[in-house]
Length: 492
Image (cartoon, rainbow, N blue to C red; front, side, top):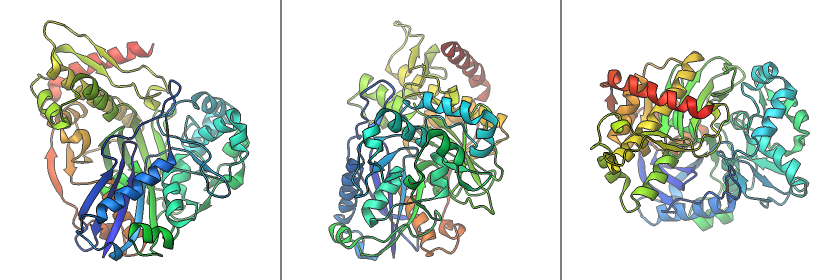
């Protein structure tokens, strides 16, 4: 018996087939091979086509099937992870009305700030655990304000994972976790926020049916099953935003446990058993995958927009023909501190942890006589690691004190320079695991379909592959403080 996991990323769609008995991936694939375009027709805007996601999902699954390493008919359930905070709008015939306004889009910041004032700071933070910001609800308000002809045609709003589930099953559903990441959920009343809906004048009927996150969100349609070589009627049994899903895939389920990822964006995600919030809303609290009205497990999330995107930009502009592995080796040739070169990696939209300011990415202190490619790539990796430290200190202000952080051996954590710098500058050991968002989604489907009786049962084969401990914290502390001073000056 197998499980299928789909991860709707910003760069591509990743899919994996997991053997229920071993809990390991049998085969994985992604589509397309090149990174998917982010459309930015105005500064600070970021959109992608939901129909492209759907096409890429189909192609990725067919690519899996072509390996002949498993029997697609033996897939028993489907799970979906997805890029958080995106907005998809469809009409009553389930036709997409416009491109999705995705997570790193900044256009709704002012709308969210007005709502924050209107609802009241303390009231919003107490009930929503966040300011409205430029999250999904504010993006919908932007459409209402700026594209009224589209707004009038809306039947349902969705997050990216809800859309793919709709294409697979024909049903549109949501969960408390999903609503909370869109800033639609009132944690005190455990209901859709009247404050948000009334402040923005939104139609309550736009919200899909709310179901438990680990449950059936529809059954695979017969025509889609034939197209993809799967069995009609199997459930989509799990849908989660990528960061709660990453935590699940690392078995970060209990209060006090912490996960990190450094993909297109960078995230530290800690589980709490209290309804905590940051008074400046620089870090955000959402309902974790294990949240229920009886057990209010939340995920405290630090997000940095410009991490992997910063590294990708550097690669494309300074060494387009080199692989990331070659760039990681190149970075290792530069000493700690990159000979004084500094990088602020904040060029991918307004940064929540910087109070929604947009500094732009900056490369500072270039000495034409001493700096070379290796210094540039080390400075980029160090700048990203320093941004994690800056954000982690905010989380510490809010009571999150991780003793160890779990991360997948993927993306920037494939770089020994980045991984060790992260550990050294934060002062927190890191456990690395073989993990992948699509594998986590597949295991989530196993939980949602009742194939695993509990979440713990889905991770009996979960093993750490490497533990990193601080080695150069003393050297990095003054370098980090200089970097922090540079950032603070850029924010003034």
